[in-house]
Length: 327
Image (cartoon, rainbow, N blue to C red; front, side, top):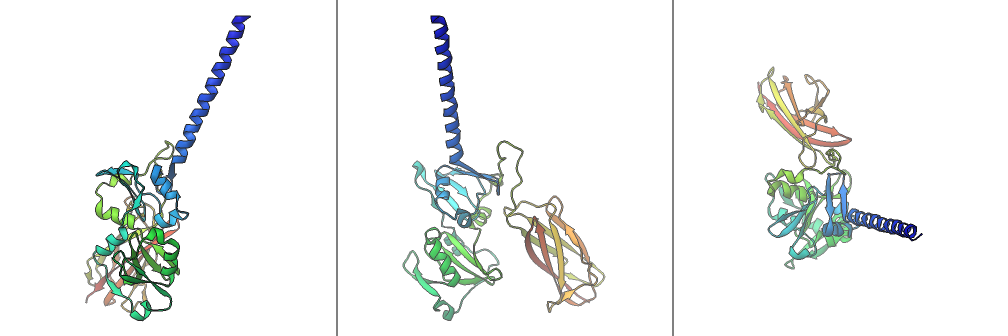
């Protein structure tokens, strides 16, 4: 009888221990899952203090975009790139901060960037309000930029510049961001400064490599924007010759896109469309995201612009190049 009771108690004890262990493992998995978030849009995770920081902002995807690297260590700091931001954390798990990418790009404009100021009558208009920079100088923030800044001032930081035109696009710089106004859509857009800074200052493309989800085969990163580049040679051609057009289509991280649809439009000096001898058709990029096309040179004399429109998964991107016909 006693032996039977001992066996019964042993079985109960094993059952209790097994249940406790299972609950412990389930809890640890739950906490681990809550501490790490995988973003299928870019194939990267955010975890720990960076995830807490990301979650603290209701519109984090709008303000920071998605992660484009994992967190990594450099010179005593933990860093992680996002499409529109760079998260940084000092030693001893200090609170994460945002790198001043807006100021950086205002002070380091890219090649080929043409800046011009807006008129004083615009900057002094009723739709503007002045805010101080870090040194106390006042800068106007106007209209749609003002509405956006008042909603997200804590993330954007202090103003760095007046509103201005860059290559014809209204923009304004803040400590942690750059705002663009897209007139066609009538909306304010945050520039992808995290991607820009990575391209300029990082030299390890492996940091961009996406992770597999749940141990599966590597996931194809979601395409969020298209980058389209094009060249044409020779730029001076004679009727009856051929010119060589090369088009490259990549995603937001510069990865080539195979199977993008490319359409071409030709216009003359006046912007009028040209058809003959160009046959309207759609092309497709190869596995390097590249398209090679040899085009006949028409008898038309003068400047011919080639507008390129690429489409992939419903997302479009555009570029333009040109050549001149000489007789």
